[in-house]
Length: 121
Image 1 (tube, helix red, strand yellow):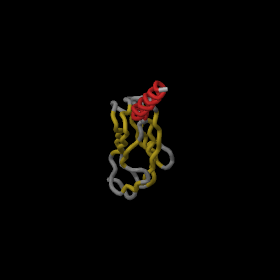
Image 2 (tube, rainbow, N blue to C red):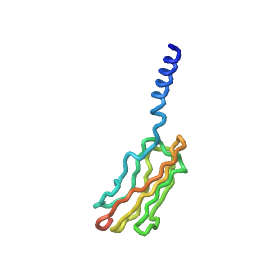
Image 3 (cartoon, helix red, strand yellow):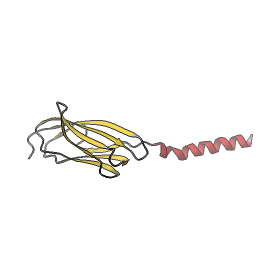
Image 4 (cartoon, rainbow, N blue to C red):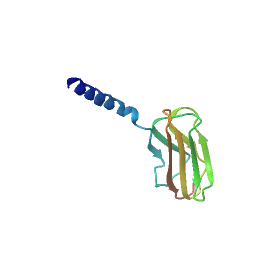
């Protein structure tokens, strides 16, 4: 009976050690934030992830309220951050659409919405 208990404890300990490895990359911060009202000129969008995004296979797009792509870029190198330089934006609603390939092979996709109030300079 003792070997079974030891085996069960060993399996439990192994599973506990593997939990951090099972954590998937996720979006942890963004500027602008989801549903943010932007009141000052916006020159770049920044997304921050819990793990590195693979170079060239990660993309971020900025779309206007009609779904037209205003700006987009691919990841230049493996990084936890994706940054998209933006043109001057007119007042209105915008959508950040991203697709990230984490270095562990997981694909993370999402969308954030924000609004611009006032003219950009």
